[in-house]
Amino acid sequence: MKKVLEVKDLSISFETYGADVQAVRGVSFHLHEKETLAIVGESGSGKTVTANSIMRLIPTPPGKYSGGTILFEGEDLTQKSEKQMQNIRGKDISMIFQDPMTSINPTMRIGTQIAEGLIKHQKLSKKQAHMRGIELLKLVGIPNPETRIRQFPHQYSGGMRQRAMIAIALACNPKILIADEPTTALDVTIQAQILELMREIQERTGTAIILITHDLGVVANAADRVAVMYGGKIVETGNVDEIFYNPKHPYTWGLLGSMPKLDSRGKELQAIPGSPPDLADPPTGCPFVTRCPYAMKVCEAHMPEHTHLSKTQQTACWLLDERSPKVEKPESAFVGGVRGHG
Image (cartoon, rainbow, N blue to C red; front, side):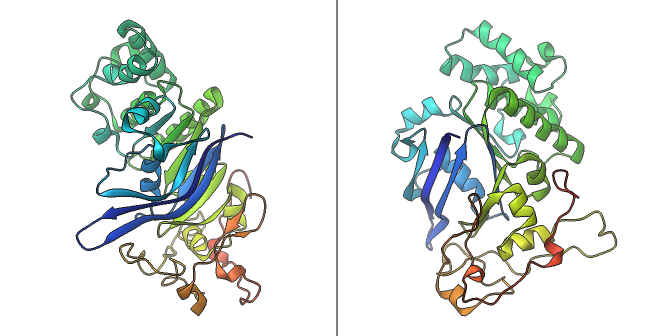
């Protein structure tokens, strides 16, 4: 399957008065056509910075592309000018932002905001863009699109604003859709509807999706592959079954163990003790070392290389070294009932 995106050894830092905050540190991943890749991790792990860097939305300064490449269809986006990126944003790569109330302009009608990209990138007339806007609102499941297209964002509910955000992002049939926590502010029922909508649109249009989330429940039902991110690094990647049923990194075990389960009523939720590392002074070794119950001296001194466990699964952990003690995944990390499994 063809790769539409390949990120290689990407590093991004932010200048502050005290020190440079190394938000993304040597991240590499790829995305195939018609595929959904989920990037998961706690707040502060570098997920959103990575997503924004693909669209070149990192303000420079204070942000700085310290190293690496972002190859979109073979061309390095880090070398593009702002004018060149304006021709790519919305047309080839689009983004659904985390909070539609702040990312949609409250002073403009929804139809006007959908039409902007269509007029700029597809050279449609205002009338053609208006008709296409009605089609898009219908596609994302907004009732009475002929009326709704003339309304302002404050006249939409939270779920409808998120649908409108998706319509704006899909207007020019992008090859890549980046969804940054698209269901965070929504209730469970609307969450399910939005995820189902994204699946249907992907089947219909063939768009590749990068899903940024901290919710592994969302990942289980929406993604093909998963990249687990921590401390500005990707510590484990694999397909959904590998990450849920055969995870090898203690941080992935912790994320899975902290998920509420159907049989856990009355029991305390598992939590990962401690806090994420200070990326103004990141650890020289594994970023998870201060919170890992299995940490060894080598973990403090050296960052482990990625061990290839299969064609799709890679894990950066010293426990996989043949000289390390054998540690089994704790039972609390197992998540049943995923993607139709028992």
